[in-house]
Structure formats: C-alpha cells, structure tokens
Length: 262
Image 1 (cartoon, rainbow, N blue to C red):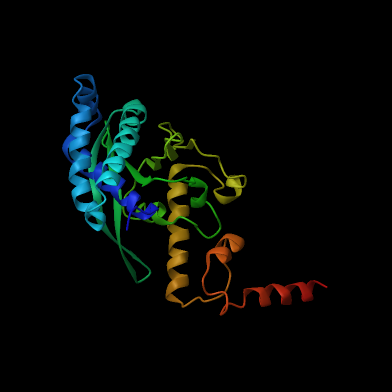
Image 2: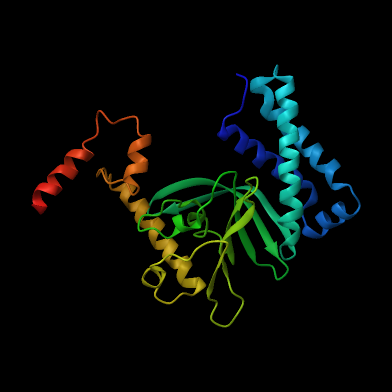
C-alpha cells in the first residue's frame, strides 16, 4: 500500500493526542509549553511515537511518511493553540478510558476518547472527529450517533462535545450545562434541533441526560428483542452505501405503501 485511508488517519490523530495529553495533562501546562516555545518539540515527539506504531503497514513509503508527519504537526499545532488554549481551564482526567455499560441485560464494552475535568471538579466528555461532526445526531428519533449519549449512562458530565479536528473547520461542537439555577442547556457551535421543545419539554440538563438514557435503553431493547424491520433512519444515504441490495426488500415495502395510499 502507498497511502492511508480515512480510518488509519483517524487512528493516528487519536494516538498522537493520547500520547500528548498523557504527558501534558493540563491547559495551564499547555500554555506554559507554548509560551516557552517547547510545544513544537513535545508535539513532534508524540507524532514520532505514534507514527512508529501506525506506519508499520507501509514501512517502505519513506517520503509519504515524512509528508504525513508534517501534515499532522501543522493540523494539531493549530488545534492545540487555536482551540484548546481558548477553552476554560481544564485538566485531562482520562484518556481512552474503557468502560462497561449494562442496558436491559445487554453488556457493552466501550472506550471514551477523553474526559476533562473543570476547575470545580466536574467532567466533560470529548470524542475526536477528523471529519464533519454533527451533534444533531444525538437528538433524532432513533439516535444516529449514540456513542456519547451512551457514556452519559455511566458518567454524569456537564458538557458533551465532538472535537472536530478538521483543517479549516476546527471547533468544539456539542452541548453543555449552563451554570445557573435552572441548569439549562446551551448549544456550542451546533444548531438547536427544530423540534427541541417537543423532544425535551423542559430544557434542563438533567432532563437531557434522562432523554439520552431512555433513547439508548430503547435501542438496547430493540437489539435484544431481535428487531429486524427494514427501516433505515437515513434511507437514501444508508441504501446508497449498502452492499446487500440484491437481498433487500425495502423498495417492495415502499411500493406496497404507495398502493395503500391510492
């Protein structure tokens, strides 16, 4: 092979940041490294360490490896200085933390990319995304992105974010609890769903966590009950990428529903 696919690039970014934050741990230390001009050296060390692990699949592509290291250095230096340094003070509490979740008899072994801790000892869940991230997928009728909502069954955070490490579109996108008497919900770099008031009648943080728990439990029960109905949430996108078209009867279902309407 001569190149990485998007999955390999994503793994590399995850590993670099895991190694980096394993050494740095706090925003205060990050700011100190940046001020003393030591940040580049530490980041390059993390990239070299991660590259030795990930590049084994294409060891002979020396020039490509150099270009990929350079690309990741520019990308992550921008992320650390323009995004991480502008956040409120934090400590990186956990990295790639393994957790086990039990839902209605279903046991899931999961891994949280990162858990930060605020000054007042509250936790924030972070999931890295090297492509476009859409927090709106946490509020669909059947959750399209249940991973972070699942984590809130075990960890009670005050913020849940996608860390979108995409060149030219870097941002933290998600929801957080406003620190006030009502503990209302604030959307960060994300659009509030149009039907949010019907999804969560009283928009408090606790109600949001309860909503996610109910939705993830519902999905677990569907799986345990053997639900096999042909009903993709994003039909056109799902069907376009499906390689089982010759076995699927979804179009027959559509045809029958059209006949019933007539």
